[in-house]
Image 1 (tube, rainbow over the protein chains, first blue to last red):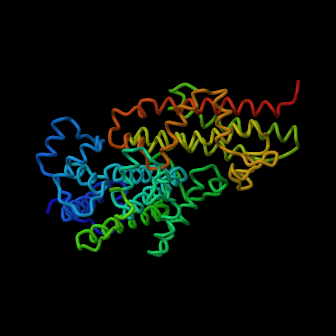
Image 2 (cartoon, one colour; image 1 turned 90 degrees about the horizontal axis):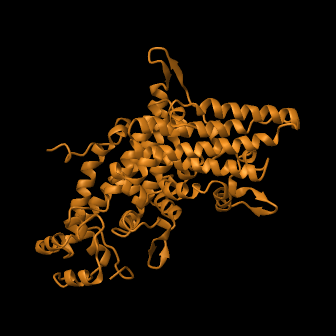
Image 3 (spheres, chains in turn blue, brown; image 1 turned 90 degrees about the vertical axis):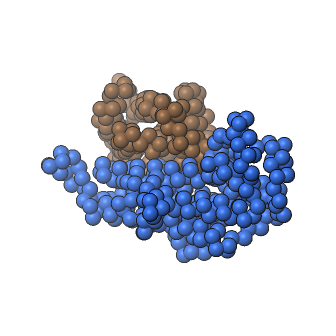
Length: 267
Length: 183
């Protein structure tokens, strides 16, 4: 099995510096599961149609899907319950893109930055990155709750999460976290509030304590390994939840347990 | 502050010194010993150090986050210039957020402070608009994550954080001037 196919087990500290390798098999499975789910629903667009779009230079990270193109492509499909967002997602998947590229890169960037700052004995600076990872987790949770309707709108259409409406109701990020906390006995909302104190100026930052010593050998301040392990705890916890959510969603797609009401979504 | 001074971390001494000078001036003039500007300076130093660590490790996307954090710290310091003794002490010693502070019965809004900043530092609008979305997943963040080398953001990130540091020192000097005894 190629290294990108094999799952890597539980997320641990060592993956912080190379989380793209950890998440690659997870995202590959998710992409495949989404493709198969949309294929079963009848969204597979004929290859020649995709090639025609490429030929007129309409394929790019931002596809120009105006109503006439959608109508033309829709006529080639036999779908009972057509959903514009699912159709858009399939077009992107078949064109070689997916909705997860940016968030996957963001997860990795935050992890690598976090461990880099701890290794540079700058733990207080690393703490805001835990809040950023919680932001990533919130957006992933929203995307899993409303598939194909969130990440594309954020990263391609430039919307913030709170500007996205589902069935005419704006999404409330804290409500997404609270819902996941209740369903899965997590404490994401509590963590979010705690780490927000490291993003915005606050007295909490002046009371932050950690062990550090000066290493004559290295000629600089160093945080002991046991202390790094303590400081990594919440970041590792968040990564484990991200992995579990993505794998659980993949399982749901593959086992046919996914059923989303399309009533009220875009047609 | 010149680029080389920033890269050599000259800001550590400058920011610590000015916070200590304000402490001494306040102690002399107002007979009050409060150290609120020291934790503020420590936060600015923290953000600069983090930016440089990540910048030098070529982790530009993560480094840019600290420009946004630095810009917010500058907003707080400018609020202190506008409303002396009402901001930095309350935030760093009394655990208040900016939005919890009232001036003449009205809650402070960051957007109002930023509007005042722009009158003196017009370039601040560009910097705030460019980086404020980096706290959340966003179009701008996505574009830099996938197209880093060509990004509009990475070219100017270093000069932008240096600008913010200059403005912080400018504002700090004005705040310090308040506590000087007249000649």
